[in-house]
Image (cartoon, one colour):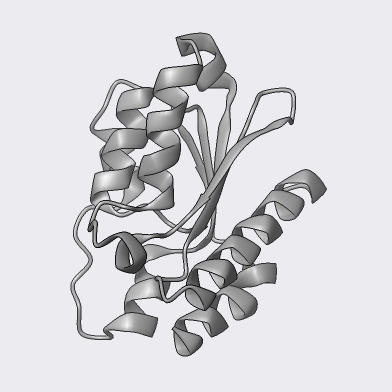
Length: 154
């Protein structure tokens, strides 16, 4: 990961903190173009909307499918405070966003939320089962403490 990655991941953690302040779960995501331009950002809104699919990653995948052509999506990066769940990973792959960078891994999140929960398919499993080229980078050790602390607050 480079300094630009860290900058975008810090924004994801800030968005996750905003989500917690509004009573939602601590997740935030940023979509960045191939040239480094921030295209869109979202935070978790499950509690405030009552919609169990109101994940920021899913919202950004939908945004990308409506606003970017396939080559732009392939060049884009989605940054997120936590590794995708299965639903969001499938949407990410289906839309064809070329890169995913996350702070907390799914096992880290599970340990914070429910230590006994079994992690099913991870984002790398879904990418491997597809014919879509997606680069996955994470976790980001530098931001793990700050992102983890949000789960304690939530």
